[in-house]
Length: 212
Image (cartoon, rainbow, N blue to C red):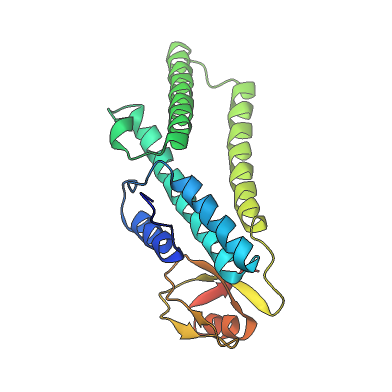
């Protein structure tokens, strides 16, 4: 945020919605990450690890995850097209990620091209050891994707006693929880902590899935 304006949970949610709805990266201040750290520190000092603090951390992680997906796509495109890093609205710490991904994609395509060239020169079928290596690479990739998904779930903090973490499947308007606190509104994809009774109601209605 600029000037003396402090980051709020509402502003964080707006950024998440914008990041989710558009294909390009949102334009964020260079100090965005530092502002989030300061905001979380302020909330933790005031009320400890409250639900707002935990939900804000999840929203921030989702923003970063959405931006990472876009950076990966742009890095992949940049290998064969002119994708300008300056026009992508990347934050300073994201530039290095983009450059490393671009280099990895470029190296990967070079290896594929070399392999195809070698195949064209050799009329014989693919040697068994090369086919085995290709199969091992594919298996490694699949295992890596599965491990990444498991890691994301393991990263979720444990909910407070009497509460569940749910992932929203469809838009949910603001409602009063059984703990007499206001929750929402939530959008599809949000991961939030709500009372167990409310989590059960949301799940039975098909609005959410309990994930922890």
